[in-house]
Image 1 (spheres, rainbow, N blue to C red):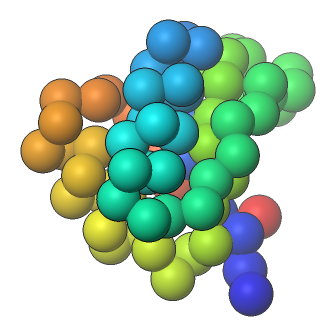
Image 2: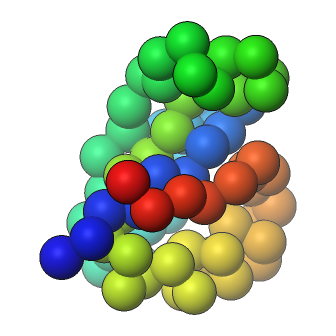
Length: 73
């Protein structure tokens, strides 16, 4: 099982995304990002199983939660 990291600009967006994923049955974990991502304006992220990447992209778009990137970790 590969983990993917969705990068977001704030803790508020991170918590909203985590709550949305929980409601839709996608296991996730909110994380504070290290210095590698801070230069890109992203301070928080959500870890999910990469199998749910397509659903996660659709849900974030549908519910107006902006994200910067989704990376395999």
